[in-house]
Image (cartoon, rainbow, N blue to C red; front, side, top):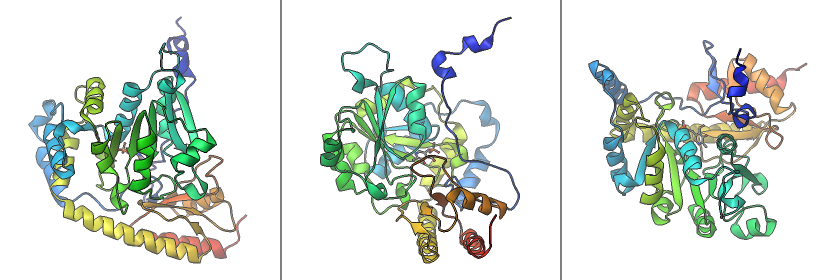
Length: 372
Ligand SMILES: Cc1ncc(COP(=O)(O)O)c(C=O)c1O
C-alpha cells in the first residue's frame, strides 16, 4: 500500500495553514469577528446578480475581467492595464509572492533578500503563510509603540528592516490595530525601498486618506484593494491591485485563466455603478466606530484610534480571552488572537446601530457581574 503522506512535499507537510475567523451558523448571532460589513449590498447589485443567473452560467466568464478593469481605471485615473482583478485580494497577495519572491533554496545571485517576504508585526496573518507556502523567508519587523509606523531612519537604526527585501507588505490602515498611516509617511518608506512594496488597503474606504497615488507614481509600488469589506461582497471574492504595467503584467502571466468568477465580476461592476449607496454606509460605520470607541473608553477599555471598520481594544478587569468567551455566551462573536503581542486585546468589527447597542449592553453586564 502506498503511504500517501510520502506523496506530499516535505515543505507542505510542515506548513501551518492560515486560520480564518470563525463562520458559525448560529441563529441570532451578532458577528463582529471578521470585519464584514453590517449592511447588505445595494438592492441594485442584488438585482444585477439575479438577472445574471440564467443559462449563461454554462459559459466561461470574461478571462481578464475587462469591463471591471475599465470601470476601475476610470475611477482611479489610470489605464485598465494598470489593474489586475483577483479572487479576493488574498489571491493577488499570493500571486505577488510567487511572482516577485524566490523560494529560499533557489539559486540566485541576489542573496537572501531576493527570497524574503517582509511585513510589520503584527499585521495580516496571511502574509507569513503565503511566504512559507512558497518556501521563502519571512522578516516580521515590530511597529513602534501603539502600532505606529516607524520612519525609515528608525528602521535603519534598528537594523531589522531590509530595504532590499524582494517583497514588503504594509497594511494601511493597519490591521489589527485600525491605525491610519499618512500617505506622506508611506511615500518616504516607498522611496527608500528597493524591492516591491504592497500597500494593502483592504480598509481604505473607512480612512481619512489613501495611498493609491503612490501605485501610479512609483514602479515598485502596488496598492491592494478589496470589494469584501467596504462593498459588502466577501461572499463574491473580488479584489484588485493597481500598479505599474510591468508588475501587473507579471501577475497576469501567472494567474489562473478564469480566476475571477462571473457573478463576482457582475456584482463588482454593479457596485461601482452605485457608489453613493456605499458612501452612505461608510458614514454610518464611521459614526458607529466613533460612538463605540467613546463608550468603551468611558467604561475603562483602552481603545486605539481606528481608520477602519473595526477597533482594537484592551478590556479592563478580565483577560481579553475571557471577555471573548463571555461575549460568545451572549451570542456576540468578536476576535481574540492567541498571539503573544496582541493577546491582551479584542478586535471588534463595527456593526449596525442595533449590534453596537447589544454589544455595549453585554459589556456593561459583564462589568457588573462576577465571573468564575
Ligand atoms: C489586511 C487585509 N488584507 C486583505 C484581506 C483579504 O481580503 P479579500 O476578502 O479581498 O481576500 C483581509 C481580510 O480580512 C485583510 O484584513
